[in-house]
Image 1: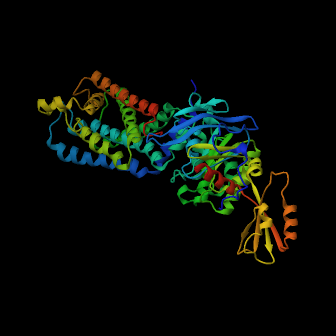
Image 2 (image 1 turned 180 degrees about the horizontal axis):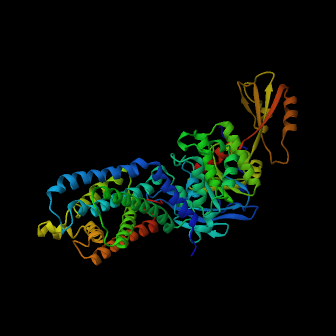
Image 3 (image 1 turned 180 degrees about the vertical axis):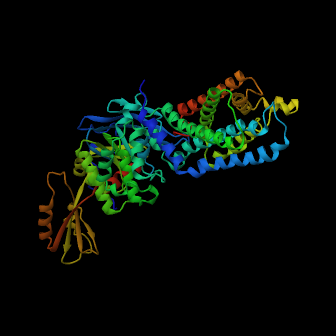
Length: 335
Length: 255
């Protein structure tokens, strides 16, 4: 993606670093991470002083490039990785000293397709329910499998299922004990479009049922569609946590593209104050404006264009996506 | 005390189901192997060996053969049971579930011990086809069977947690357990060894297991029964400490 034009900057209150604390969750926090750091035995520091609160019933999307620390953060909260320092509470229960109560609330869908390939769907999902301390409930397991379109596969061995099906089995396993918090670590990796949409429908239904959902995804448009709040993590640091709509509003830029009747060699001097850019061999003029500003400046631009005798045959506006914002954030953090 | 019973049951059931899926390998092959031992050692070689302490050679080797199966199967079942989730990555479920190390051990070791005890009884049943048997102290026999199965299942569990590949998983059973079992008086009384080797044999923990177990059958033993029980319990404690340390430190489990 091209860097933003000179006048487009991060809003001052969203300066990348230092970013002392995540913005407070609007809802009652169900997960509270305080000063969490993790250094592996190799010396690699995967997480640096993370502070984060996740509200009850929200969908929180954790974004970051590969190796940013997303999975380490999730793994610590779920009890798979030991933190080096800091604390985490889940629904008020410390994940170390009160791990039973904390873990009982959580369901985890891991990034890797790890499953007992020789087991059938029904038994592996029932196994997960038992591990989380719940006695058999065939009616509930049946509902989970039906919701995930796995019912007709219940007697099939996992090794015979497609990648997308296996992914859904992992979701069914995570839901088998009726968790109130669900972690989805790259849940749609390797899943085809149709299945992916079905999966997100299921996730929305869970959120509607009051389940808190924390997801990581490489498909940023999914976060854009699904999430209530966004967290961006890079090199082990949480560089931003923001309400998604607020983030799009604050950091989103809008572009007006004018298709000209006659191509220009350069932007006329009398239009310099509008910071225009030429594109497509001079046949398009691009004007980027701040969605937050009191005035967009479009009226003034059109007036000046008319005064300069520049005519256009069509116009189009586009708004930056979360992906654009994410890439810019990470790039600025690197600099 | 708060115990996650459904989790213990889930692990136990899962492990027993895995055993059922590999019925031929799990039950039929040890029975065939034991039958071969009877044919070779009991009938072919045994017919040329005089009685040992008034017991026919065929009968004498029965407790040793049961122990041989018990030790190897306990180690194999328990080590594979916990190593396989580590290998496939499904260990994440055990680590993220609200389950204590104690409950994990009870589930896996309980299942492994159950399998090897059942196998031990199947071997005993097979032996009855070949030699007439009378068990002098059946409750002691069952006691030794259970204690040994649990102890060596714990050892297998430790090996399964320690192993970093299938080769390592096979290493301890092949290079340590099997030789110690063969040299532990399975097929002979250590009294028939030269004095030096008798002393060396006393450093072999399997000698105490086989001796105690054989005593429960025929009231003959290489070492005192009390010492056999004490040594078995000592070995059980060593394995328990090793498992406790692994879960406390997260060795090979957590990063």
